[in-house]
Amino acid sequence: MDQQEAFEGRAAWRRSDFDGEDWIEELTAGENVELHAAALALPQDEDLWMDLAPSDIAVPALVQRLARVTHELDEGAGFALLRGIDLPPDNVDYAYRVNWVLALLLGDVIAQNAKGELIGAVQAEVQADDNGLATRGYVSNAELRFHCDGGDVASLLCVRQAPEGGESSLVSMVRIHNDMLRECPHHLETLYRGMETHIRAEEGMASDTIPRQSIFMPQHDHLLAWCNLRLMELPYEARGETMPSDERAALDAFEEIAERPENIFSFKMQPGDMFLTHNFVCMHKRSAFVDDPALDKKRLLLRLWYNIRGGRVEKALPPDTRKGYFTKAPYVIRHKSA
Image 1: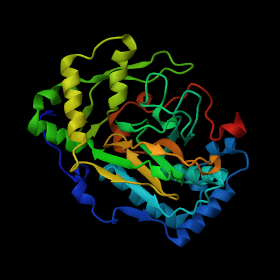
Image 2: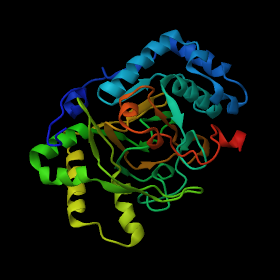
Image 3: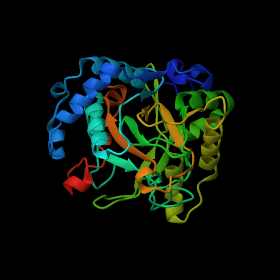
């Protein structure tokens, strides 16, 4: 396909396309009853959770809603928000159970780090200005720039929110592509050539850099894309080099378009929300936040990466690019299984 082509459709959205709250999927009382029963029915030993199949979970009403969510993620706008999940703020173990039930129904979970973690606690452990060579952004309270995560979809389940800051923002990479095609196609050509990506090599990993890959991946009737602004700068910083001027200019143009108010959709998650974003359609970011000083009230989100069964990315990319960080046996809750 000719790379100099605009892509239209719901995935090429702008901020004005999402006025009001019609885009939010709010769980009904009946769906919460189903979810609660399924969460409590999971085995006591969470290592056994990975042996379960979607057919083992009896939630007929919720399954219909999640099917709509999957369609919106894979063939629609590329993001969704489930709201109204009944989630006590002081019962984290129960939140893991709820998260696993939803994940099992939505797709195939992959490990998000070399330790084999399937559900990660997003909580400030360090005070940092930015995620750098040694610090992954989800363990700090710093502002995070636009990025994509691993797997087809990244989900965040909000257990507790910060009293100040912590706003989430989204941008369509299809919209960025179309704007660049119209305004600066020479920079678009550079991004089609691709960028290296730093992955912060962890124990058991052979390299800390993914070779040059195109940010934009045209398909026959849609566009897939993947970008992590900070991780595409870090390979040069790690080698003590300056990024080539054409790559620096192209990435700056990409980010400038991403940051335009008319392209950014922002909101603040509330407890009981699950935010899902398709990593090959949208980028997301988070504003800095000020935490509650009480340990049992600190901001806590549960992060999970999964692949959509039979989705667009499965059809476009080889399996070895979709397996996640499986260098150790995967686990769900470290404090129980490690």
